[in-house]
Length: 326
Ligand SMILES: Cc1cc2nc3c(=O)[nH]c(=O)nc-3n(C[C@H](O)[C@H](O)[C@H](O)COP(=O)(O)O)c2cc1C
Image 1 (cartoon, rainbow, N blue to C red):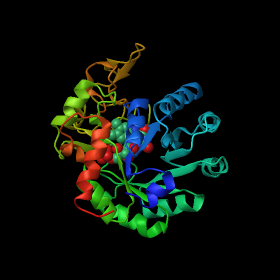
Image 2 (image 1 turned 45 degrees about the horizontal axis):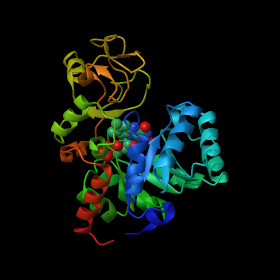
Image 3 (image 1 turned 180 degrees about the horizontal axis):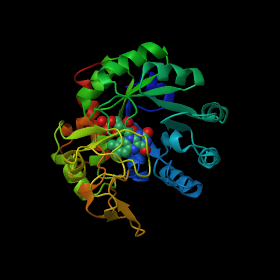
Image 4 (image 1 turned 120 degrees about the horizontal axis):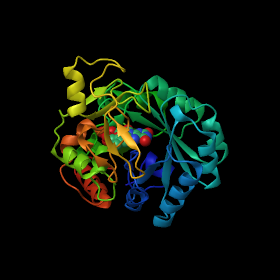
């Protein structure tokens, strides 16, 4: 299976492991790349040494292409330099103004993928020099900038960007979703929630159990529910005791929300995680995991079992091939 995306990024299939901040691992990224897809590692919350170590670890596990993901709301010179020093070949940028990162990454020989939530933003990203657009629809899990559904967004972006490959994101969890994305003109699917059930993803068992039990109706998109540590960044997560408590109180603003200041859980280093913090429940967290920000896309109803990442990729490709020809 080769198409515009595969040719540009050197993969043998069009499945992209979305960067899933806080619950990714070098093993997960490498497993997807080794399975012929493109693994993308979220590194935007690592210091330069941690970023370099993450890249080296991935490289020790795969000789195949992989990418890293940087958050433009926390744009960091040091992170970009660390990527260059490590010879990172593919950089994904999301959320906000990319500053001069695109021309600099291009000048350093990197391929750049920019996440966009409207056709207009996709056009602007292409004008900056993006090598591909990740079109992220409203269904997506985690932080979601736009309000347009994947079904409406992908063809609009495809029409806007000409020959530039478009990667569809949001609500895609199986081969039917990949086939639909390809039918809409995308040349790959960017999949997050489904990979939270990969064996290699360090997802807390409580979070994982909630994901496996959830239906397509069990998520909601919030403007600012989990805004501690990352304000003004709308997101989609599983409904939980925290969201229900806040809704029952009339959805009050920051400063008046029920349970503010409650330390729900702790990280491995002993630091507390307060209710309403933006934090993906990692396997090493301890405490009331259910009350935390359990990011999830609407495709979660299709996530029903824990599997090795390579098996997930193979299943998605096999199922898509029965529907559309590549
Ligand atoms: C747990 C989790 C963490 C995420 N972290 C990031 C991130 O660090 N960077 C990013 O660009 N997108 C992040 N996203 C969004 C994904 O990259 C992707 O757009 C989304 O998962 C696609 O929708 P889906 O979950 O329905 O597959 C995250 C999503 C989830 C579920």
